[in-house]
Length: 279
Length: 134
Image (cartoon, rainbow over all chains, first blue to last red; front, side, top):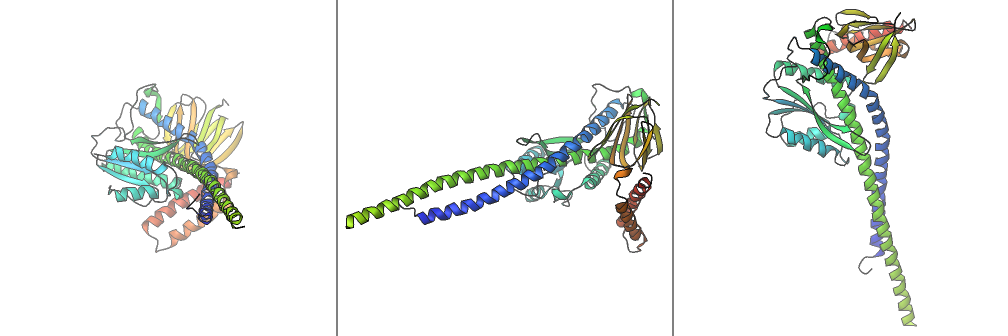
């Protein structure tokens, strides 16, 4: 091991070790946050699903009137709600969702509502028009915020400010797998499979009023669900990324230790040779 | 009384799933009572007390926002917040009520402040009312 001194290797090992400690700590933090986020996803999923199926039931059985939420307009402008993280070092979490959204934005007139610092930064630097930058802290957004965003979106949609609302988020499939996805929130799609008999539904006070009230609630619910999914996905992605970073650091430390021992041995051998030659 | 299937789901999780005999909730157009064999029905919920009769026992809850749907005999309540009377933090409700009152009485409050305070006052009143029923 000529050329590399033992001292140099030792410094590198030490710096590697402190890096490893940091990534290890980040992994542990992410793991504990992940547990909370996972519990929340599991709690909110039934709400998400029932809300979705109830709305589809109503939409499917509703043939006698046309709500602006149901009419498909020619799409001139699309509103994109994009949920990303506040911080980096989470593997491909931020870049995956932003890449997916970018690929769908290309060639369209859009207005983006970014949630999370990374999303805000991305769209600012790409000069994509944004509705607001108020939600640059994804970790602080609660149910109330989701409902107020939903209310704003549905009002703007009714005014015709845009003709389509799409949400981009990350699906928490499992601890090891997260997939970015987009979901069209407005207009509601009329599917005709398995309709409820339309003649026997009471709308209290009236079908249009019901729709006007329920759709913003529905959007808020979907938004909250997507946010929960994304947060869990972020922590899972960060945990995996930090786990492999720790693994890499360990591999490098092992490699460097071997080199260090070889260099030390070489130095000792040389010293002995010199003593023997000198006597 | 004949029981029916009732499911109450909120963003925080499943609040109730099982058989109930009667459900009274405050919708945007007033209180609605649901018994077994109700017609299919959809109604947005307002802010108010929900009364649920389970095994002849009345239980009360604060139920705010969301909707009620009855589809083929299955009753689903999808509120934004739903708290059983014994889960309500009466002190917090009282504090929130006081805070809202101060903002409403303050002449320097802006319109948005007043709107928020009014909503807070209404929620606090519902919670206080329900908490006193346990």
